[in-house]
Image 1 (cartoon, helix red, strand yellow):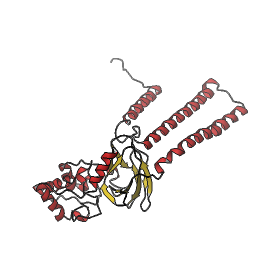
Image 2 (spheres, helix red, strand yellow; image 1 turned 90 degrees about the vertical axis):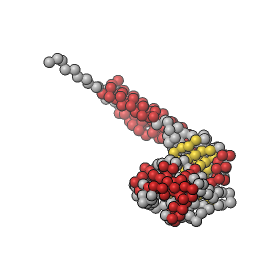
Image 3 (cartoon, helix red, strand yellow; image 1 turned 135 degrees about the horizontal axis):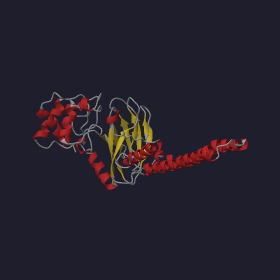
Image 4 (cartoon, one colour; image 1 turned 120 degrees about the vertical axis):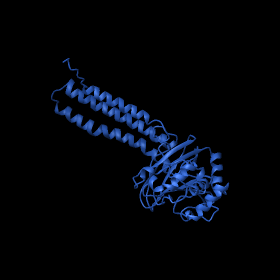
Length: 337
C-alpha cells in the first residue's frame, strides 16, 4: 500500500476562505434594482453614506481592540499597574464609546429629517392589503387617480407618500430609493422619496404579514417629469374599449363572472373595491404584485391558478372557465391600457 496523502486546512486558511467568500457575496449585492448598495435616490444615497461611515468607524474600533489584545497578550503579557488598568477601563470603556457614538449620532440624526418632512410636491396614498398595494395619486383639486401594485414618481422632485395598511402591519421599502416605513392599520405614517435617476426599481413589503408576504412586491418607475405628467393624465382616463372580437368576448366573460363586484374598471359598470383597480392593468409592469408579467399567457395563468400562485389570496381560481373564455378574458385585461 502506498503512502496516504492527507490535506489539512489550518485555521488561517479557513478564515481567509470565509473572508473571500463573504467579499464575493457582498459584491454580488451591489447589482440589481433592489439593492441598497446601488442607490438611485437622494434618501438612499444618504443612508448609503451613513452606512459607509459607520462601517469605517466599526473597522477602526475593531482594529483598536485587536491591537490592544495583541499588545497585552503578545507584546507585553505582564501584569499591568492599577493606574494603567483603570485608565484603559475609563478611556476605552467609557470615554471612547461616548465620543464615537455621540459623533455618529450627531451626524446621523439630521439625515432622518428629509424623508419625514412635509413637502409641497405631489402626495401618493398607499394602502397595503393582503397581499397587494392600493395606490392613489392625489391631484391638485383633491381628486384621486387609483392604480395598484405599481408606484410612479417624477425624477428630481420629492413626492410624499401617505402610508396605511388594512388588517395587519406591513412595511414599505424601495431599497434603491430610500429607507423603510411601517404601515399600521388605522394609523397614517409618512415617507417621502426623491429619485435621481430614471429607471424601474423593485419594492417589497419588509414586514412579515402572512402566507404570501414574500409575494408582495411592487415596481417603482422613476420618470422624467414631463413623461410622468403625461402618464398621470392618461392614467386618469376611463378604460379603453375592448378591441377585436376576442377582447369583446372577454369583457362579456368579465361581467358574467361577477369580476366587477371586486374590481373597478372605470367607464364600465365594474366598481368593486375589494381587489385592485384594473382600469389600466395592461399597461403596468407586473401582475399579481410583482410575480408575473403582463402578457396574455400571464393573465390566463393568474386567473386560472390564483390560489396556487399566491397562497391564501382572497381571489378564487377561475379554473372552471373554458380555454376560449380564459383566453378571451386575458385578451380583454391585457388590452386595458
